[in-house]
Image 1 (tube, rainbow, N blue to C red):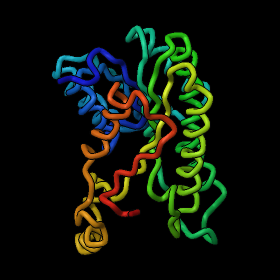
Image 2 (image 1 turned 60 degrees about the vertical axis):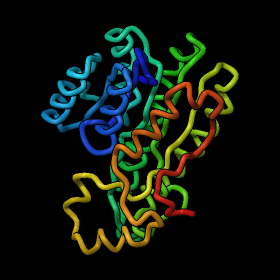
Image 3 (image 1 turned 135 degrees about the horizontal axis):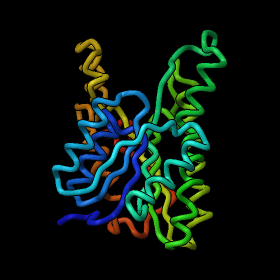
Image 4 (image 1 turned 180 degrees about the horizontal axis):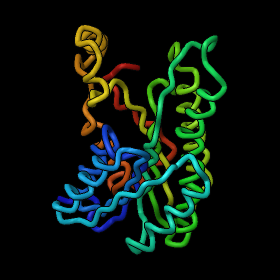
Length: 248
């Protein structure tokens, strides 16, 4: 059963990792996928080709979600290209980890702009279309770090915690128009980035998780399918933890 048949989804930061996993699972469920990338053009074009082979429409857009103007242009272009938009997944994110005493103002500003301001930019841009059709699902990719904090990640934690506050506020504002807004808080998700880390370190992290494994991009993507589809039609303003029980 295809849960997202003929829905149009915009996914930011989807050329690799969790974003690519979401795009792939969405396409498998029948969604047409518009996704953004910042610099990884080759993987983005390859992903668009892969999604198209699944029988859906897919297109990669080079766009900086942290820019208010670029976000507006992007959403309008997607609606022109696809005819509508039903789902927004705010997934674009970066890290610039450091202890506060060593963190520069630029490192703080860049992380907040890419991770948090992008959510404002993109939500503001799709809102007019969602309001017009009186439906829509917004999914914001937060993190367990946004819930419990993490030493050396004050900028990242602040951006992800801000995302949760934003999510709950938008759920309250737009609920009467049948527009839902939820957040996902992934725990330790194994991607090509974590594959470069020392295996002993990674194994010690796995041991600290009740399910004794790291998550996969597909684990996060499946949660997104639930929140994007009609299965969650009475769910809004929530933070869904996909963390193997890490914060239990």
